[in-house]
Length: 455
Image (tube, rainbow, N blue to C red; front, side):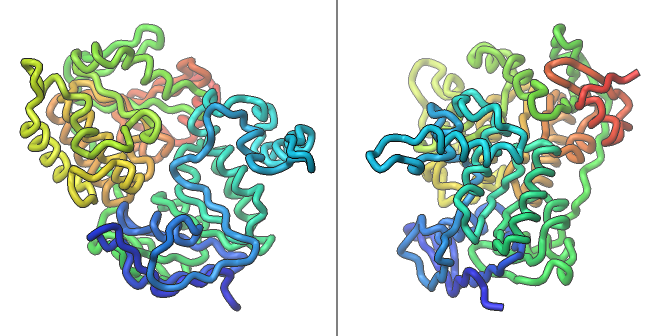
């Protein structure tokens, strides 16, 4: 069968850096094609070439006449506009140039109703949570009726029920004859969705095979160039002194432990971390650090260099007498640059030029540089490849072994269960259950997160 998309011999350079070399990719109708690879492997660049964002590349691209729709990992919505306006931006105008409000309203409802979100059509995007914004981005891409749809980490900010809705829609798109290029770092999604898998590493095509013929262990080996365990590290150690108490929720955090906060969309888990952090200057001085869920909006300053971003929360440390120690800043940034294995040309590269996963590493390094005793983590492995996840898991064990306390929110329930010593479940801002013996089942935690109070 002739593919809907044929990319042949694709190469791309940014200055001296060669990010893609001779990559081939074919997408067929009715197929979910997983594009896999570590952060910095070249996936995002290949997607942008397919979408026509980048030119000046080597090779050839044959696209379908009805176009390509892309759902980017970093959202492209206009925060100050309503959901309806974002969904219909540039469309539904009368012949005199005025906006056709009635047509826009019908289209917005058509796109939002499958997700159960028709009521947010006239809500400003800036008032929505990160997860709901992700759904709006997905709905907008689906409304373009393209025959090729690219999804870059589409479930990274979605809860289980919203992800299930997306998977149902993907099934419908396959039946309509769409080709879907899907990027994810979640192995369970690869196993569930993939018809075919293509793996990139360091800008090179490592292999492409039918999903039925490619075991997950082999795919991971292709991604990282070595065997990597999919298992979570063992938690050990005895919790120490109390470091943090949240009286409103009856939550305590002790030195040397990871306390997981479980909750579905709208549970208030992320808002709880923000409230605990409070005023940044005071919290940093008290040894509290917060990694937010949205690195693009409030995690990093994209036009600044990696060095500037990494040292941003620690400037007092590098200017004890009011004069900045530039050499000290660079030395510290270089240390964390290496420790987190950030894939970039140097610490002078702009944060906005990095892949999403490498941006996440820089955001995490920024807070670790403040030497916190309490670390608040909101989806720390979102958009991170499996090799980097293993490194972050190892670092979390190392940090708690040295007496740090970690308050963890994660949309990945298996990750939350494996990494947490204790778990507190939230439903609409209220604690519904506490699991203190590290033996909670996924079913019990989900039930509590949905509002069922533990006995």
